[in-house]
Length: 208
Image 1: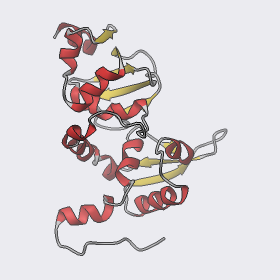
Image 2 (image 1 turned 90 degrees about the vertical axis):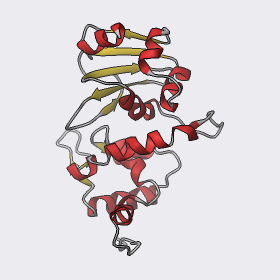
Image 3 (image 1 turned 120 degrees about the vertical axis):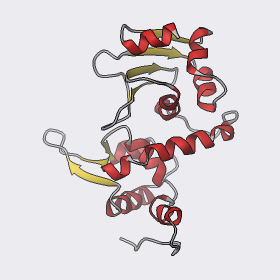
Image 4 (image 1 turned 120 degrees about the horizontal axis):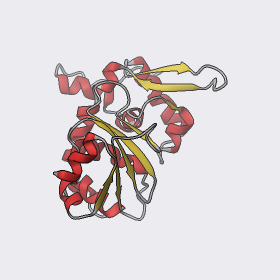
């Protein structure tokens, strides 16, 4: 394992960048905010990263106390990576970075990869309250854990059990919400988001 590079500056921002400033590190955190992930799953959802770089970043993150690696019990018997409490504290950092980067989204470029769950953090920032929200897009389905204080804040695929609300929308609407051009409640009122479910969160979204 190579020694960690440092800016050698006595500044908390510089020290933070010593740990998370390398290319791909924060995007790995984004993926692990969904909970434990196997190496192969991480590689599939980080298009463009080489296997060597991903392996190196994961080792660095484990050394720096951002992630841990554990072996699943049989019959899985695979290793998974997950965030530590310190790693999970990067959620508001990613939220703030995503909000700052909203104007950079613009129109999707032909070379841009997309995964449905990449919309999870912007939507999580845009929805108030508490509960599990299932989101259905053309690209796929994911779910959010709104107001979660521990554990995963989102997950790929349908929500386990009955979610508190289901949101159906097209990709243009989800993109507009992610860019900050459209609020979730405004999209519901304009019938651009269809809300179903009997939970408190669903009722709040429909009645707002």
